[in-house]
Length: 478
Image 1 (cartoon, rainbow, N blue to C red):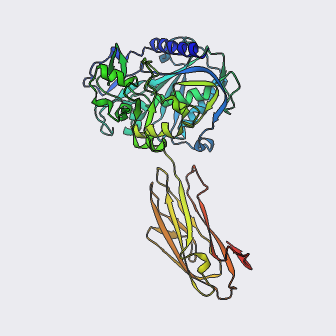
Image 2: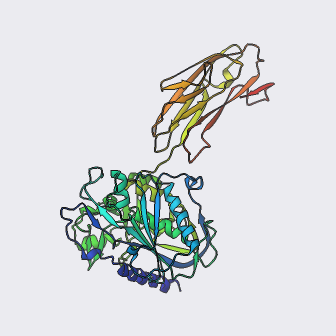
């Protein structure tokens, strides 16, 4: 049962690609002088897999749950650009689609609205869940990281800050209206025998954002460009020996072998993707024979059942994956996307150890603050309300901080760029009236006016005095 169903899926994938006009082998010509070209035929498919593996769920990212949005999408339902045969979108499918859009709105940064043509088609193959790609591709804008390289419309717009493709949508995505086993819920609790629609939309939008290579195999030869140039994605691909696929001769048998995994597999080797994969290269899907629309533009099936399973080539029954995972996000970062988040942190320490501080003695405390996010943290406030038993307090810092009062232990901090960190040092003298076994529990905090992924690291507690061996007679908490 399993073998013939997967074989059928491959055949359906080929038919689906053919019906969508994916003719990469037919257009090896150079791009000429124009900086943009239609890419409506370059679509990547997701195939239904009939393995029943039981409920498996990856919840949405925290930013999406909290309603954070750093990009704006608009959706056109069944516009005239869809092609094929469409039928009216069910309202619950539209709700699920918009939920998936919100996932990406929370993860990528874009100053230009991303427009999606959403097509509810009755003419896709029986096991084809969906397909998507960029409507146009662009090269050699001054802001692009690589020259002589195609960038999808949405990414090109973000990099340049302009709408390179004018009034047309950036992404075209099609979905199988004839599939009777959809689950349109947004809770990720997919019933047995159903395919989770949100997962498919999140997957396909990822392709539309540039998770897609233009290398291909046709007629026994491997090609490493489409219309004269590679995609940004292609710049990071290599064989199992870490040899760049660009070092292979174009239109060669050797490249065809490599693209079909014959030289130890295919890998995506980018710094952010590798970080998301625990420091290792990301293995790509490279079956033999080549499957147009599935090969090379998905991660390998070794990631099935992991938080990085979204961008594999197929989706199982009852599987819901509402988070792209660190590998896919890292790959998008490598090709040029900026992932937008702030994560301010604070750690309070007593210099020399709190138990060594005595009544009437000096005390020195440090507040180490930072921003481990990817964008600048603004309106940062650090608060450390000291006990009245810490006398004559003072502070210094190498960063720009502004106290909020004459005698205040709340500071407004200058904007913290990504990766920035600094220290506020506080000095004082412990009251001589305290008993020798005193303990003062002091909690410091940091905040920003931006929503964060992780607020667990926004407070830090230190104890002045006390001992781990006995309960203090005097315990004052601030």
